Length: 217
Image 1 (cartoon, rainbow, N blue to C red):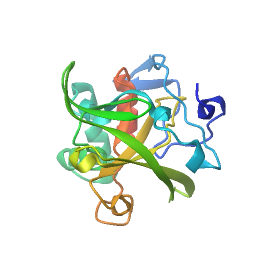
Image 2: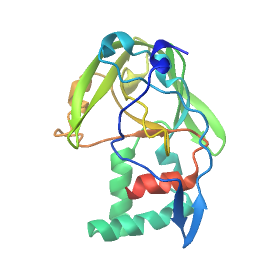
Image 3: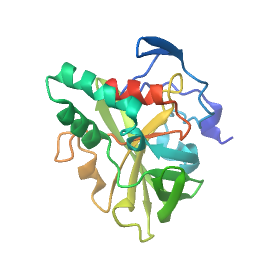
Image 4: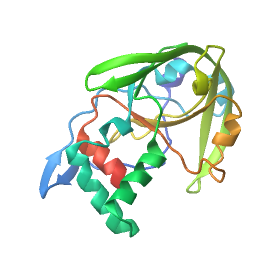
């Protein structure tokens, strides 16, 4: 356990997910116990504290679940809430969460990118990353950090990777990321052309009820 994992995390989620059960089709179902996920400390001296190992493990983009039959009903609820069609609601969700890859594997030095087809994974890129800096941002009146890593490997638009602290452990451990080939500061600007783009990475064993609640949030 690294020094970051020895201290407590006190950071709320950008899309908060709480509760121990969820109503699905009129039936209350208990959430299964989430597989153990790494914990990232919120430290004052982030430049010294952040390590790629803080995100170590296998992660799926939440977008791989968006076509699940159980998720489709969520678009009707989002559409009703936002006053749009179901198709428009799905497109908005996909726009806010999209990633070019389907899954990641992160070690203490390396990020490996995969495409997925069911349980089959195909590696599409990998690189050894070095931590550069933490950039402060605000969302909903709270303070967060993007932790920026860079690689010299030939990984195209994944050369610069910004990772947010893992949060939501009480319901669905997840984190957000953004990436760019260059000028990642432009990608991190919520008021710019990329807007509020929050790709969300989750444990591959996440329960579909947790994905549904995240989409409907």
